Length: 394
Ligand code: AMP
Image (tube, helix red, strand yellow):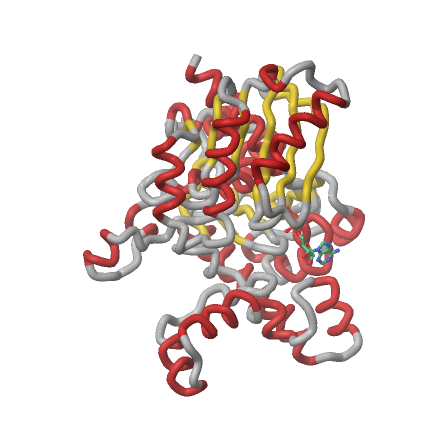
């Protein structure tokens, strides 16, 4: 099966073409375009390039196109990307203005350019469909909740991959099988000892997710990607009272307040240095106290959420680090794991320092809790889910 993964940004289009045999995959080609203004033109150009380079004899050979859609109104999961899906994206365009319109347009365009291909959307919210209602709801009046304001969660593809892969690494193929089939079968009972994992996706955008027996039970992200951990330039959790107060006392319009919370906050806002943690760390090492505060705030927030989910699950069997920061920065991993010996979590500093962007186990020999690094590969996750979806349809 040939599966094209289309990654659509507000001004970019990247793609990877996979040959899928079961859930094993081979990348046949990849490419991309920046500063895109005409999506129809670049999509057709990409298909023509694949043909010209001899990767495919005709665009008709492409069986499916997968889209990592973010947030749909009243729609989640791994679904056929049809008119209902496009409407769900359009209806929440105001909540994810940088993400939803490019995907809605891209899906419409692919339906025209590849009329025979199966189009599949994997929502970033999909992994959180089974989070208990008590945790998914905010304490708001009914009208707000009817308008769709609840905790959705994001980075679902990445955390689901961690759920499946960590279970495999821990020898729990029973749990890995539950996660693998989650969007086809829903959560399944596990006999025997439960598996309690907390996944830390730490990158340009970050979140922490609790995973019980292969299914997400909660996440730090909320209604929009403006919640949970401090992000590269977005604030993360903020008391709702702060927005009206800042508007009144600083004389900000709603648009300006929104811009500052989404573009000038997070690591950038606290450090005053950069939205890239590498620059923040360099400034901290040069003695910049604002950079040190930004780093401390990030670590504190990660520990807060890890602790919350370990408590909710009645314990912790594995702590997983993934994405740009989680895979590469051993100092941050050490800081997250510091002083937790009483909880049975002890990191081995040599293993931690050695692990960079590779799958690894970092716990000391006497640590009861496993500490894992699992490199993220969201295109691969998507290709697998598209394969599973199509196989379940046929
Ligand atoms: P991602 O969003 O997963 O692509 O991660 C990208 C982010 O990872 C970048 O913004 C960097 O700030 C961060 N990053 C990558 N390598 C390191 C590192 N060695 N130390 C700290 N941050 C890093």
